[in-house]
Length: 372
Image (cartoon, rainbow, N blue to C red; front, side, top):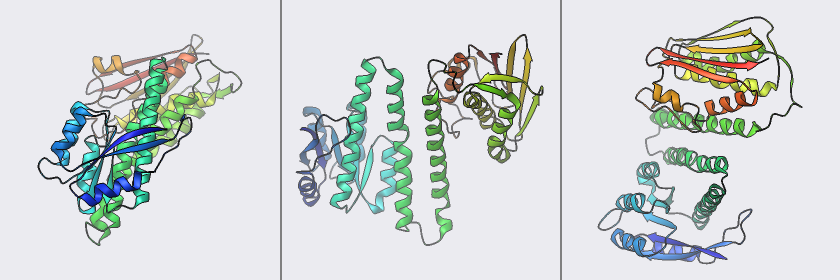
């Protein structure tokens, strides 16, 4: 059995001894683990002592109190982020300080445990942290073996989903304890932020599912003759609710009955991602034109928007996996950075090509060319 070194940093002796007692004989098992994992508990009562231990000992998990004599828990968290980022930090906090704990998770803490906590709550939190460390170890091993895409999958899942889940849990606990008052209106901002984070997680999961559905070798058993404008219309209808919120008009200009022998799911992925991006990165009151053409034994899917546009540097990186355009205009737009890399992969499978023409402040035109 392997043991993880867990350091408890709390100035309350009862908390430290309680954690030691609860975790003394506790073990975690997980699929594909060679053996169960237990815990060695190291107790310290100040932030200064914690930093010295981190420097001298191999620590894997830190249970860190917010309020400490001397330097505070957030100072220790900052030291760990800068010097030992591989350590998982779990903040121990009172319910009254939950907002600070949520902020700490956004600043690098893996999770937080409100106190007073039950033995089961502590065990559950440690179990999640242990599984996270195990998966992180797997990703490192797979990366060394050259399986980069699997590494990125697990890395994104463990990092991108962790922060929003922690924040949502924090908001729910604040609402459960009615910290902001008795009126539901007092919690509107928390609800809005939670829904926005859920939307971001859903988009990420759907992108990852799309990516796993794409085979590196084209399988023809799902191919059938499809009418292109029917697939385009389905995607437009799916994106219309988001377009209506931004007062963006989506128009379909097409030659009737353009046919293609393909997997309908693959072509839907192309339309969904291109139209979704054209809406997301458009200006309020803007327009999206989807054009379908056929010429010279090729089919052309053209999606034009009147949005914020892209610089040449951004265009060069646009089809890289997990790349996201980051500027003042996009900071509130959620996304995984996978959508266009997925489109590129589908297009490559069909021996096609995708091009982009974009100007900052004027919009973008994406052109997909597929051989008939």
